[in-house]
Length: 169
Image (tube, rainbow, N blue to C red):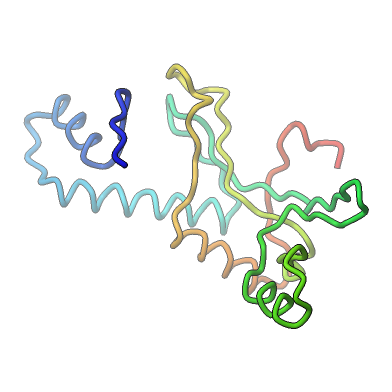
């Protein structure tokens, strides 16, 4: 089934290139070069945020920085433990094969990071566009792997900023 969305908006590199050309017509930069510059710049920013605990402020777009949260462990009404974690599907499938119980799941418990979850967050308080709550920031797979390798290979926990609402921890 095909769905036609009336309000489809895509802010990709081609959109930014067209906006760039509106303001700087005299610069004759090809689109491939522009995209390469953008990718290189954002890659350097993400790596600096992860490795050097850098807080990066884009004018009009907000603040980006690394935070560290404790992995939450909750119990449901039946007393089963529920983690704020991803399901480890290979181990879950082995458990189902062994026991035959399809209700139990095995979770990643982040022992490598002492049960902390690291993520790059976007502080939208200084954002200048409307409907900012509808937008999310998700880093791509390459940068998630870079963050994972930094966590695994570091001897001590990564430095991170605690947001204002975590100041009591």
